[in-house]
Image (cartoon, rainbow, N blue to C red; front, side, top):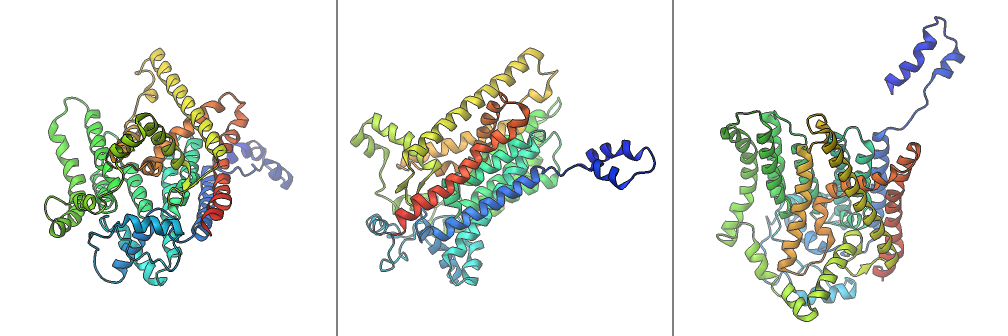
Length: 475
């Protein structure tokens, strides 16, 4: 803005004497930049999320009682909880959910999240103590972490695609306003911190170049280690970091020596393994070898959950796959409470059309890039080549998808929210696809047209809360 203002004022001042009227005509009107718009997005997210935190009845966010009890256990000075048989009682859980979590049915025995890594709960414990165990305070704590995630989404895309601020704003708005994501961020749960730390890890590695400083390697390792003691969903970050190290190595000029890999390996894996081992060693001491991730104890405690084999034998492959796809799509965008409050079918239909348009637009965009590359050659068009961050973002989505499919190969958990660890690259692809369609419009209309679907998502957040969640759950 400063350069633009000086350029316009220069011809006026060059004539010598400048009158007040000339100065007034030479002024450049204020034009909001991307940073101003992202502030608006974050504020809107916090306002909408606070409404969700206030208006969603207690315990009506998936797994919230178990997360709350974990925080309370630590806040009471009892150390870290140990997952025990009986912490997951499916019959009682179904009864209390059906009854709407009435006061006369306590949630104290719902403790099946005690197997989770502890960082979120340790950070949330002071909030619990200061507020006297307020569920709302814990919800707002998680919401604030989600706000940082929105900022990181914007900054990350702004860095990797500096010439396209609309992509950064669209990605931030996607992360901020997907209704199911807002509902989850406004609940007491560890997803918010896990998503934030994974995003920070990718933020570090997505801007790797030929030379990476020792401080950058170490910072990446520390963030990765913090993620390892937050939630298992962050473990895909290990593979993403390994892929980034390999891509940087492959980018080195010939002759490359494999010994180059030692330095980043030590600087990244050292801090990550030190932090992660604090949790793993404790688990081996408590649960025995080889249960360092508590997965063996977890599977024993939650035995009885429906499996794919159960559903296939009951429904057949066709109906099973139909429910798999449809429920995943619905619950990604919004299926609230404990999956018991779907949106109206018309909203899913509109979201399906917009998603299809975004997908087609994204394929259209990629096709144009590859055609331009083939016509002019990679050497003449270095900006058309896949950079490190392209591969990292693709791997980010694929790893989240593989994790989701793998989990559902073990238990029936058709919940699209399990794809949220990759919400940033999904949001970027969504934004790229929609922006491609705006190229059919006059240039002056494109940004406004791109903003419409994201404004629609923010409006849908409020519709879902006041017309679906509250009327259904506040009984």
